[in-house]
Image (cartoon, rainbow, N blue to C red; front, side, top):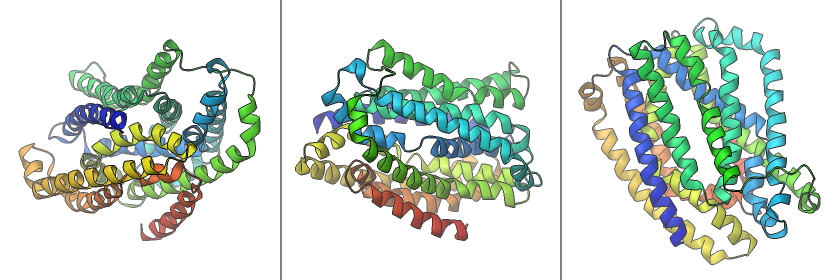
Length: 391
């Protein structure tokens, strides 16, 4: 437990530094005289659609790594451990299918976004390198968590990615990037950059190998891997659709939809401040939970669950109240565009959701690494069935 606490504290410090950069970026995006609300909304859609692409392409490979890595590690030498060969190969194949789907359904996307959010179509092709970067990085991240490199992954995702975004914003203000179009094109490559850095680190540390031969562990657990990945992929896909559908429907259905998507993106970014400790705890807890389930160490699982729940609940509730009580003053104090006042009640409901989620600790990770992982799929379907018609 001490290792989880240590990594969680270090990761939380890194994540908060990253959040400071994120809020600097948000301020630069939303302040008077900066980017328009529609441009900020488009950047938010890039993240939503990029995560949706990963959900399609990933085929549940992150869950495969979480669940089965301890078996590969215990039974194979490092150079014959093909867990990443399987995960990366399937995910890249999945993304090729995403690209094919993007070509086939481009006409449908055009009909949905042309009237209210035409800029989505202007930068349509640049969504794919962004989604590919998220896909590759997410698979590498899941593996890095298993080899105790969660601090680095949090540094790359929470700090380096936002630092690259900060530089691109400043380059745009300074005229080094001649237009918003140039900003978007460079922005679409940011996740590919941090994925390359993480891959280089893992190879340098001799933690990452991609043997072409299929191991006996893969052959032994083949059917279980397929069932697990299929269920988790389906559940994660419906969960992601439920979480990004609101942004997409705002952009597609409302007049001047990208501007309102910008308002929604601001609320989401502020809400993420509540979630900061959760990210550190999750990344540090995955490997111990996987090992505890393998060894049937239920007492350890119980301790992780209880301590993560109470600590996160106290923090999230205090942070939610602090932001909610000062939201309007914050918009005026930081000289944001007055249109962003509409984000106040969006934050209220999204913030309450985060408080409830954090108050239940690392339940999703406990379930996902256990034999009850099918529960994630069924609850995801229920969430999707409720959220789509309500949206």
